[in-house]
Length: 161
Length: 462
Ligand code: SF4
Image (cartoon, rainbow over all chains, first blue to last red; front, side):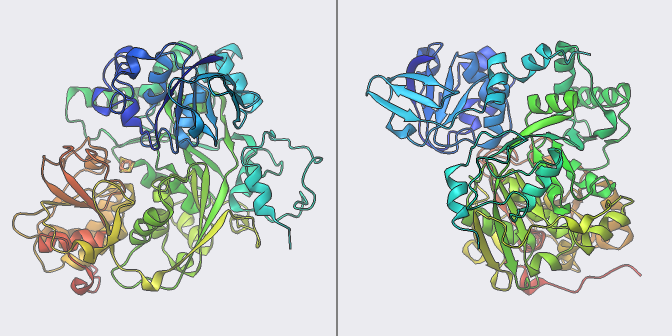
């Protein structure tokens, strides 16, 4: 997967990703407010296939799944961060949104063109001619991500009664 | 002595081995897979994963023994997804559903959620359904549902509460929970463990809540994917009610689960509540020399009552830093801070005193059984005579849903676990967190006050 980087700082919380007071909106409308508190132009400029890059403890706060749903609705291909809050990390993978731990995420700058291999744990920054290591997403979780998330995977596995 | 294991772990925090980790390829200098000392989290996950030995960083598929959900996160989220999937609940006997967030209904919307929850429990044969009997985390131990060694998955971030009983208990989002009710399984990354060793004796008027407010500040709230093990002589001396505070607020530390090794106190509590402690409850201990990421030590004897100032539990300081801050509302409630023992703490401050003019004291006991016990032992009478208002047993103002919400510019001191902006009402309100002693002292003084000079002996009805 390849696309542009949108870069954010540490401690991006679930209220910034999916504001609590707007939670009653339909998913596509809620997504238009995603990250608006830190970058009002984000939702209108991000293209399907682009990446969100951030610092520590991305997605902290509530267990609300809408935080990951909004990124996915906007077509974000993967989130790359130095760290994730646990429930956000699980929610993202469950929804088919790859989340990659990368200690060197701080070297990526806004607008850089990235090529990301979540299975190998490799991020190529074409703009800066750098290759960064990320923790690979383990194979059986990547199966779920590829299937489109947990619900799609359950369906494919014939969990339907 | 094992060489440099901490480094070995550190270099492989997200290793890719599955549950049946091969016996080859290990760093033999560090590990003998049979005899290497293990943390309690490792042992619990090893059991839940079917017996294979596990190490921090391993991703394991675990069988979930107890599935807990409430009216906000459970059936109303599962029902449409189950229909979309054409699937059903795998094993209703493993599920506990508790209606606590929207109780009692205050509008047509909350009434509909409660009805849906009731109907769902009935239609799916979920016998362990508790409607308006108390907060989910209080209900599990009260009904004797917890047994040392089991894996508990809850659709609520404070599920680690059950770790006080030596259960591996963790909170999950809605889709995760759906997967769990359909398959009976989930995955987790075997966590690194931080051991918190608490020795010494808490002073009178200082409580487990104060310990957690200190830890939120010292350890921070970014301990994702970590287990926190609480031990030491102070923890061993604690009642189950106080141990539950430590495990509950592991959620504020950001941890996956908070664990306390079971002992005679644990077993007695389980038996007294009609539960089954299992064949070897005392076997669930960490090994001496277990590979902790770090060990943090706390001397309980030196601890003062603490309060966390707005808007974070980590923003804590000794109560002396906030003396005199005027309080509009004092709130005793939530899974963490409205158990019988918490009401008794408040009663020791409130006995023979009145809530200050201009301040209101609201008490929402954690369960209806708690209310009944507090009525029977005289605690409730003390609170009522002091001028407290009794609220229903449920999440109430803690979840920002029930009675007791705050207006713009108001200040509240609360025995709950979170004081994020806007959680208890208007975003312009200020919420301080403290122990039930400290909340009661503020109710009497009308401002934040050290509870220790106000303490009286606990009076019980004859
Ligand atoms: S009382 Fe508060 S913290 Fe406890 S489960 Fe309810 S909303 Fe969550």
